[in-house]
Image 1 (cartoon, rainbow, N blue to C red):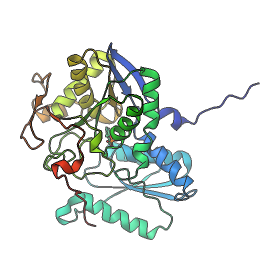
Image 2 (tube, protein in one colour; image 1 turned 135 degrees about the vertical axis):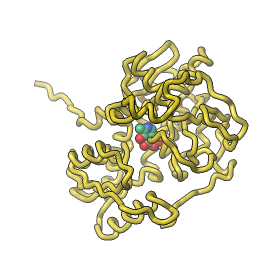
Image 3 (tube, rainbow, N blue to C red; image 1 turned 90 degrees about the horizontal axis):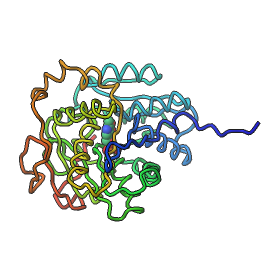
Image 4 (cartoon, rainbow, N blue to C red; image 1 turned 30 degrees about the vertical axis):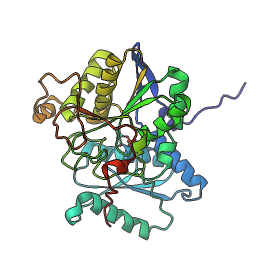
Length: 347
Ligand SMILES: Cc1ncc(COP(=O)(O)O)c(C=O)c1O
């Protein structure tokens, strides 16, 4: 009998499914996008001898990257410690624990720098007391964007022509990496990043944010500003309305950041009918059953029942105040153009 090569489960699950929604609109759907960079970072760390068999992987995260690390740790026999804060989603925490991860919640914020600094302080203590422990650092590890060469290759092969790439930005790894590699094949590619109000990533002042998974209150090294032609800031209600429409109209049960991405991609596809648009949809909806797919929670946001805008307003500076979907022509500028500084947190 011929021997068939069987791919391991992660290398199958990390690949996106490409779904055509309209003649010029494609969705690049991930079950859990972070599996790809997490697997690649661990592979590279193993190759470099930074991560040995059975060692400890430690990261500060309460989101999808932690879930990806927990899955990989369980399959590959690494111990995983995730340092989070009291805002952790209790259902996700239970899932992480069921995968064998140790989830530690820091009790108090570190003064003015808040919980993010408290988590980092605790992480450094864990690294200091566990020789051989590995910290993946998704915000700054260049292997995060590098891993997306696989997505660019998939898109070039399966979609054929890509004119516009749209996706939400958190660490910056997925959009910066996919855009960079896709431009090797399609040099005229237009790239739209999707952020949310109150995120500092593209020059807005830090503020409270309802939409999670995209946006940031620090500037990660993995965000390459020079890849982006356009930036869109989307509110939680606008993103969630688009997320529900995606489920109802196309049967795609995805998370809130996918709503933000498809809102912008759909507008691009409508307003540029001769261009092929691809939307990156980062994760599925199951994690959000108690929130984004829960009517009571949605009602608590206010505005969820009102008609949502079908077009963005174009603003003339990232600092122009706006409380609705807005768009700015970024023009592939470096981050320094807007004096966006490295907002690192002192340990
Ligand atoms: C659900 C979800 N969507 C989108 C993103 C943004 O991806 P990236 O970190 O590659 O910018 C993240 C980041 O954590 C995420 O968790």
